[in-house]
Image (cartoon, rainbow, N blue to C red; front, side, top):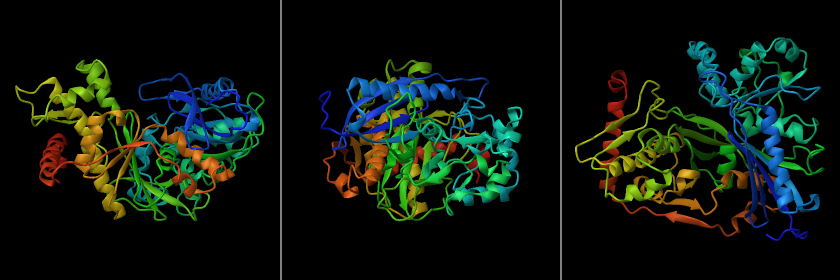
Length: 508
């Protein structure tokens, strides 16, 4: 990109994550031509509690945006629109009059409200009703119990909320409020669907859920489709008058950025954990395997609400970090690629990384990690290879559950995230799934997704066909295994999993 090239126009993606805020410049070809990043601090008041300072979230995001504009000499006339993507479920409450937060942001990872959720789930009917309305499994992960905690913990907060003085928002709402200088209190459907207060079938804040958590409707933001105009920038600290025209939670933004626009399309983000989402079209599939049903981002031309099934692998990149930091058998996580390929197989070694329990489709919080099949001949390379293979096995189990729930057969899997850079893992994933794996050359699918949403809203890109026609730089890993090989390895994996689960689960 040439600095000061005034004839060029761009979409800016603001990607507000759990540990950093980023701003990216996307051109009409869908290429990221500039990016800036600012990290911010994590706050751990007690074990299991995680918070962010709302001022840090805002200053890091505005700082990254300002640095981007200065570094590439961009003025307002060159910016078509802004899109916002964000860490999901993280909860903020602020004063409508002053814009000041009542408390730190309670982060999605925070477990402080577990006792409240456990108490509610003592009644199976409440659990079924929550899942039926929201598509979610009741958990402190989501926003509802976090809002309730703030209203109870901050003196006078509940009374002020009932008087209409307070606003709730996920991180996207907080940024929209600040960027528009308090003119707009809004969120999009994807973020609303992660609060455990939004009915994904009627597409409204649900009175029964609000009453269950004792949260006034007056606190809630207006909900819009992801591809909508959410207002214009008016904050004196940033460029003025730019439309904010795309908003989506990070995983739904990545699904859109990976061009998973049709039913049956899926993507897997290999990060600290894995987030696997499958587009199920206009049908909100209710899972029989403990997966989450959520709202997917969709283009302006798409009629009606689109849904997705979502599942998570708890330990992905975190497992490789454990090999490096706790076991010391890796100097750098990137070394795992060559080390795994230095042996032809694991010699029967399987790692089940149930450090914090097993997720879908097993759902056993009591399970703990184990290494199975060790012999005197097992080496460092076998353990490293087994760790990488375990990520592929868990993804295979999740996808199998998704295919059953959605009654769809996966054609390909799109991937992104740090661990997707590991060639051995991607080839093994293709072999064990027996489908092609598509890895984009630039793994910033989250930023691209929200930029696409913003640009489609304004007409920067005419429609989805205009995006489909753009060349896509990607690597494809094609399966090269036999059915017998897959069956043997998956049988070994499932045997290892069953040996890891507590005895009462094995007996079922």
